[in-house]
Amino acid sequence: MAGIIQIDNLSKEYAGGTRALSNVSMEIEEGEIIALLGPNGAGKTTLISIICGLVVPTGGTVRVGGHDIRTDWRAARRLIGLVPQEIALEPFEKVINSVRFTRGLYGGRPDDAYLEKVLRSLTLWDKRNAMTRELSGGMKRRVLIAKALSHRPKVLFLDEPTAGVDVALRREMWQVVEGLRKDGVTIILTTHYLEEAEEMADRIGVINKGQLLLVKPKDELMGEFGKKTLTIEMDEPLDAVPAELAGRGLILSQDGRRIRYDYDSRAERTGIARLLGDLARQGLTVRDVSTRQSSLEEVFISLVEDDRSEDAA
Ligand SMILES: Nc1ncnc2c1ncn2[C@@H]1O[C@H](COP(=O)(O)OP(=O)(O)OP(=O)(O)O)[C@@H](O)[C@H]1O
Image 1 (cartoon, protein in one colour):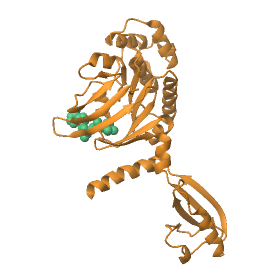
Image 2 (cartoon, protein in one colour):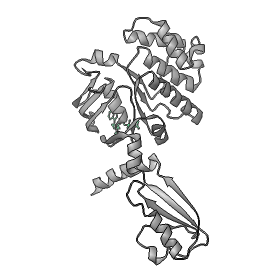
Image 3 (tube, protein in one colour):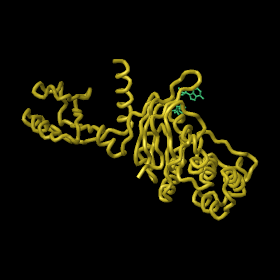
Image 4 (cartoon, protein in one colour):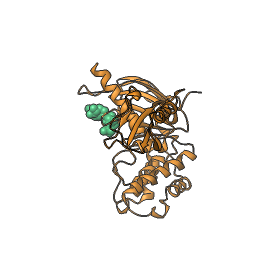
């Protein structure tokens, strides 16, 4: 079965000559949450804007629910809701009217029962008669989501949903997304926060300089690139790594008390047992050992750096 979104060889060159996207292809399955990660200017917003019909691509195609976004844009757009990066609301409008209005814009017939369900799920029902300017920042963001959901889209785009919000609000937003997942809404979000992608997404796409470097299930990405670090704490400080243990990439801390060893946890032989055995043979006593998995942040930085060094080569 084809995915709900099918992107083929998508490219965009802006009028000034900036190449914002180069031959991006990707398929998104119904019901999944996909996070698009990338540094500033990578092309994330451009990609979302093209799918939503706000920016015209210079090459390639996008289908939403089988509808081409250019030749069959009305049907495609009906399936999409967009929560933009900037908060843009009518300040003197009541929440409920603002949401009703957006539903009308999409050509939806009035359906207050559905809008009540949406507002309740976003804990906005009690605020339905408040003017949007009276709401807190977090509530305003939730109103944007309510508006984007007002016509029952199958796909929701969240462009940096938690940019500039505090930790509590960020967690609140994650819960909202979790609720939408349960309702079967497909979600595509962009973020700079790796923690956010790690927390919410099923799959992660990494974009850099207009190119989609990879799209992978989150766990696979972590497993594939996630190196582990073993820290060995010595009973007595060392002056240097013993010569017998050279060539294994061991790093001694400045105070000589800890040895760091990076290894691939999926390798058949991690070298840990050998290392500990060799230390014992040298008469060195180990006080403690700990391991740490690299974070997605480290994974991401190494990917983007690889991309940079390939450019330089
Ligand atoms: N309307 C436009 N006209 C010309 N160039 C543009 C336009 N919009 C974006 N760009 C350029 O296209 C590139 C990609 O921008 P885009 O906003 O898609 O990146 P982004 O990954 O969303 O970045 P950010 O994380 O900062 O929002 C950038 O170099 C940007 O300057």
